[in-house]
Length: 307
Image (cartoon, rainbow, N blue to C red; front, top):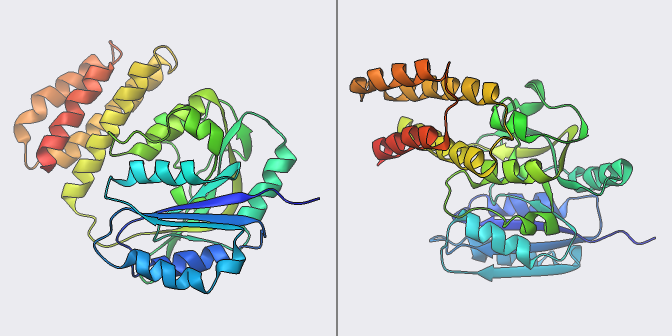
């Protein structure tokens, strides 16, 4: 019996130093039936040229290769374009600086067959964190993780921030991903938003094996952390507004208070005058469930501080 085609989608941008290692990790997969879709998002470096030279020597590894360059549109639009161009039922979305281990695709395909559930939209695994030189920093498998196998209601632990889905570890069901509109190009945290929307409609499964590496780069500045926290507030605002009644009010209150504490930690030195607003929001959240507007107010303040 022939194996189904599996797609690897790489939205590439400004990773000339890493793309060859990324592609080599794809070529090393033990699963035989692969296609590769790589779209360069108008990189100012020679990411596409490095990828092209590498793939010229590895064309026989893939049933199909799509290698394109487009005008810069951002990671969400480029990721959507890559996934739309794929032909496999399951798509492994891989950053152009990340790595996957040789058995990743084979193990996920095996698990999908064993679980045999038609409502599955996303599979994720545990992963390593590596630095710019590929040296291991830590391993996600040492952190608390969701239970193995498919589950309904994964949106709850994603919303509460109890665990993370590490992007190089995922496989997406292409049709289900496209049916919800893919990544929202208007959001900075397009991945968390997408996982929330997928899990509100479908099952998500964890395969408890370390099968990928997420590469961390230097330059994790305070300004960037402020910007990312602002994006989280905006993402949560959208979810509670678009799914009224789905999230338990007690969960919203606890999650909001935790994130307001994070807001104050980021802003107290540069914006001490915000303390009354922070204390007032914390107090009100014990009696009134925060709305999307409450989340957006804090998100917009963080975004302003990061500009």
